[in-house]
Each structure stands twice: as structure tokens, then as C-alpha cells.
Length: 118
Image 1: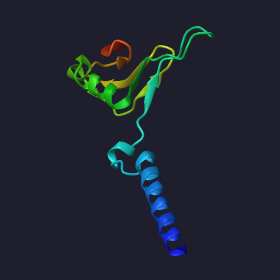
Image 2: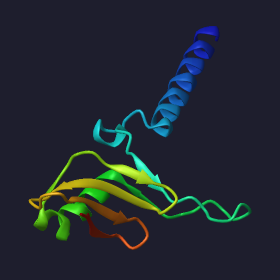
Image 3: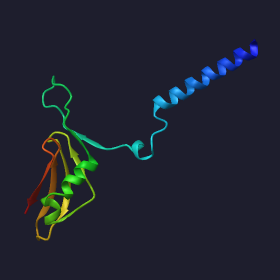
Image 4: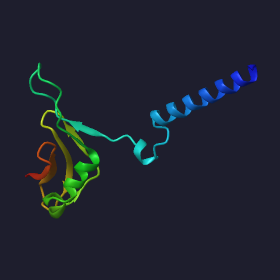
């Protein structure tokens, strides 16, 4: 009788272990465990709810690469999040002496624009 109780406890414990392991996500692939970097626009009013406008870096790079920014110059691999404007930005190498350029990706509109300063 005691042997049966021990086996029953073992199987209950084993089943609980499997359930907890499955629920905790231990079976996720290595790709899904990578931490993604997000830019989140801060809410303008102190009492407003948390902003839902956000974009991960991977999407910002994709938008920048498929925009006028990559047609006019070469995108650098450094990106910066501006939480107040709700934008990702990256420098762009352009062939205009005395000028600098930045590709700005708007996280709400999901579009990129080139800003040139001379």
C-alpha cells in the first residue's frame, strides 16, 4: 500500500512538473527568447494613460531601409529613440559637403523621412 502511494505521488509530481514547464515557456526557441528593444512614445499629459505607440528596433530598421533615406545615402547602424517625439533616428552618410543627414522613423505613422542640415 505504501509503495502504491509513493508511485502515485511520483506521477502527480511528474505531471505537475510537466505542466509548470510547459506553462513557463521553457520550450521556446532561442529566437523567441531574444530581447527586442522598443521605443515607446511618452504620454504628453501627466494624468493620461500609458502610450500604446511603440515600435521595436527591427521594424524601425526595416522602415528606414525601404524609405528615401536609404536611396539618398547610407544608413549608419546606430539608432536612437526619442520618447518625446515618438521616433527612432539614425545618421545617414550623404555626399554633400558641409551637410549632415538623419533618417527619422515615426513610430505612430510607421514612415521614415530624411532630415538634412547644412
